[in-house]
Length: 393
Ligand SMILES: Nc1nc2c(ncn2[C@@H]2O[C@H](COP(=O)(O)OP(=O)(O)OP(=O)(O)O)[C@@H](O)[C@H]2O)c(=O)[nH]1
Ligand SMILES: [Mg+2]
Image 1 (cartoon, rainbow, N blue to C red):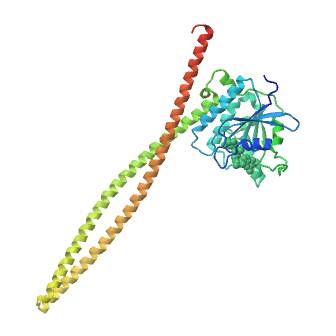
Image 2 (spheres, rainbow, N blue to C red; image 1 turned 60 degrees about the vertical axis):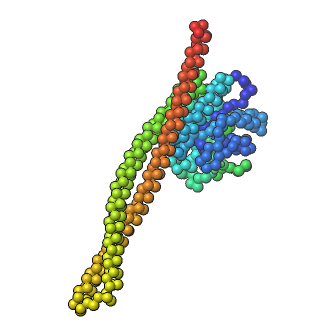
Image 3 (spheres, rainbow, N blue to C red; image 1 turned 90 degrees about the horizontal axis):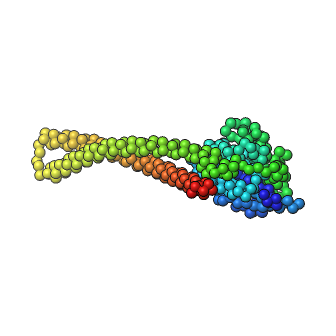
């Protein structure tokens, strides 16, 4: 082992938990790119060496964070784990152990999402139970809490709830609090420390190899490590859920199509009835006009004239009723048309969502396939190496 190499500190945590910001605060320089909102900024594993005033050095390893808020997972989570695992394997091969493994978690989030729980599980599996004494959980964003008790309660939940960070806490991992502070500014509560203060805690431990390093050193591919198989299992579970959702959406889409067909034929019937009424009204109008035009030529006696007038009144009444009926039918048609449009839009939305889900499932399947191929290649390489070393190849 290179005795001059500075102690290694690995930073892990969800995207946006503040890993890069932590490094920038310690080094006092904007060297690690910092993200905004929910977009992951760090895209690769990067090492930053910092020299303290007294000359000691430390190497901080920044990593891209897993998705936390998107409960549908992210296809890149698998690539991120692969990137981190491969870096850790290289460090193992160079006999470089980790003095500290830090898990950053924002105390300011609304709830611990399903993805955040999964990420905590993967973190525990990356470390393994033998490196717990080197693990430090740092909760960030304490500067943003108006009520510190709110953060204390959330931190307590992380420590005691099964499936969160209980195992780390029970195994003796230290929990520390930090936030953003201006240079020289001291935190508003004694329990909160600046990143620089925190780092001195982390540096006092004996370096260790992490579980995932040991697993990979024994020949496991990323997918075969405990953390890798948990991630793949979770993604398979999500794939199953997506497929179920696609099925449910498809049956809703075809139901909407049936309803639309029914409504279309109903609308056609109404339109035909309205057209028939309209032509009847036109026919009556024509007859009345014809009659009116003939009146001066006819020399009707008073009785015939009265009969003629009451006949006209009756026809006018009928015309009025038919006009009202046509108006009703026209209103019904336009109502049906607007419903139709709403349903068409709804169906379009469903179709688009289902298509998106289908694409993601396909992407995952491709990724898993690639991992499978990789595994196969690794196994073949191992067999051929074994054959060469035993002289049987
Ligand atoms: N107020 C406050 N803001 C923080 C804190 N930590 C991080 N931020 C902000 O949160 C955002 C994300 O921070 P990053 O340091 O990029 O987070 P990250 O963990 O490196 O994220 P990825 O690179 O995506 O994995 C940035 O806008 C930071 O300024 C904190 O403790 N307090
Ligand atoms: Mg980052």
